[in-house]
Every structure is written in C-alpha cells, then in structure tokens.
Length: 113
Length: 118
Image (tube, rainbow over all chains, first blue to last red; front, side, top):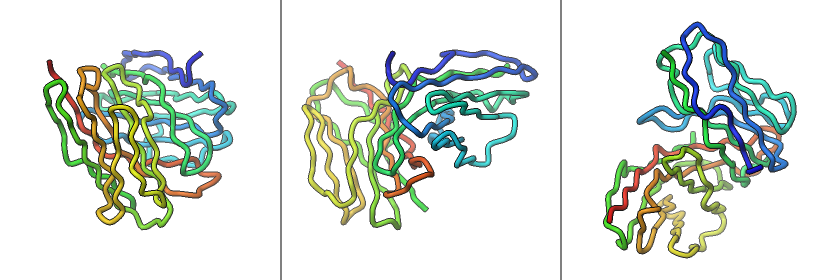
C-alpha cells in the first residue's frame, strides 16, 4: 500500500445525503489533516489531528464532522452540504513538528448537486 | 501571521526552456521551514523539498534547484531544461518551527500553474 490512500476518488451527492470520506496512512505518522481545495483558491486547512486528538478546527461549518479513531485512519463525515462545498478534499499525514513534511493522498473530488 | 505569496498564477514555456517559480514569504518566527510541493493533474500533492530557516545553502536535485534568500524572504524554484512531465501546479508552503502537540500547520501559497509544451 502506498503512503496515504483516500476513498472514494470521486463522489457526487445531493444536498440532503450523508456520506463519509476515508483516509488511511501507512507511514507511521502521528498527525493527520483535512484540506479543502476549491478552484482559484488557496488550499484551506480544515482540521488537524495530532496523536488522535483534534487540535485545529478552522471555523469549518458543522456539516463537516471529522473522526480519527486511530493514528492511521481519518474520516470526514458529510451532512446536508451546499453547492459551494464542491471541491477537492485532500488528506495528509506527517510526524509531529514543524520541520516534518506532510504527505498527501490523491484527494476526493466532491460534487454537490 | 504567516503568509506565502506566489505572484505567478500561470507560466507557459516550451520544452527545454529553464523556468523559475517565485515564492515570497512572511513570518515573525526565527525558526521556520519552507516547502515546495508539486500537484499533477491527478490531484496528489507531491513533496519536493524542505528548507530550514537557518540553512541558506542552495540545493540542486537533478533538473531542480532551489534558491533560498532570507534577506529577501524568497525561496525560488528553478527547473532546468523543462519537460512536458513537469506540467503541474507548484505550491510553496511555510511552517513554524519547533511545535509539538499541535500538528504541523502549513501555510500555502496560491500555487503556480506550469505548462510545458512541445
């Protein structure tokens, strides 16, 4: 298995659906991240988990709910999303500490109808 | 607050040309780290290089080279003899040093789209 794996790669959902994005890392890292990447916008950090505890929530709407059951897995639960939530959602992992590079998955391309 | 500026939104070059991608950063930290990532059309951000704030040595890796200058707060990336496979979006990023227990928070620039044509 390669470093960081995200599923699904593509997701189309209606505004009333509930779905979850999954991220798994095989690098032995202890920090995981969710980012949102919209067209023409900088990468937006959504959530940070360090040692399985959430340490950052960048004013993300409650319709996005993260879960980190262990250091290798990270989920993003989606509920009642809006069209402006359509974007590429990227998961990353790293070791603790500012010098450590983050390693990214391929992302989930989410489209809200 | 930290900030990373990549003023070049899009660059188009012909194969075999050299190209330099600019990155200017702002931080009040004395210890910090700079990164470059490549994002091909497939979507994954690929880590290319990390540079420490206390190490201004330039680095060369094959056709890639990086020029770090603290005096101008710049960390520019040059691709020599560009190839079509270099076509991607390139991101410069900055993180604070020495943090523990809070993850590693990166501040990204807006990216530069590089198109290399035959």
